[in-house]
Amino acid sequence: MKRLAFALAFATLIPAAHAVEYTQLQADKSTVNFVYKQMGVAVDGKFRKFSSQLNFDPAKPTAAKASFAVELASVDTGAPEGDEEVAGKPWFNTKAFPTAKFVSGIVKPLGGNKYEVAGQLTIKGKTQDVIVPATFTAQGNSGVFDGAFTIRRADFSIGEGAWAKFDIVANDVQIKFRITASTK
Image (cartoon, rainbow, N blue to C red):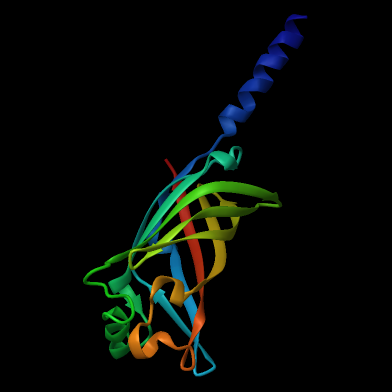
């Protein structure tokens, strides 16, 4: 009977010993990219500066929390004149709205290390509910979150005035991310 009690006590400690929380963004191993179509041609870009506060334990995914802030002036369109144009008032208006923010709400595990993260995305002072599909992969002391979702730039007033039409720059913009985080 003592062995059974010891075995049960030991078994309850195993999950706690293996619980891992990923909380520290590894910015040098993380990316936030975007793809849109201009005159029917896919164009890639990225953001060079972003920060995050996150807490993810794969054993308790529904308790996960994440917030991300992207410095919009760090946009990299592949050309300095493009970066300057996109930072301007008709597009991101980075002087008035320097960051885009995502704050997670409900995390829904889908099985097979796949998740849906419901949250709110704010760009240019406009907030929209979004569902972000993501996968998680443990890699040593790091965890990697990969995902992609599509936004409509008109929902956030990205491209105002002459750029409000979608004949030259499409309305849909795909956001792709790879976020690497380490444990405490």
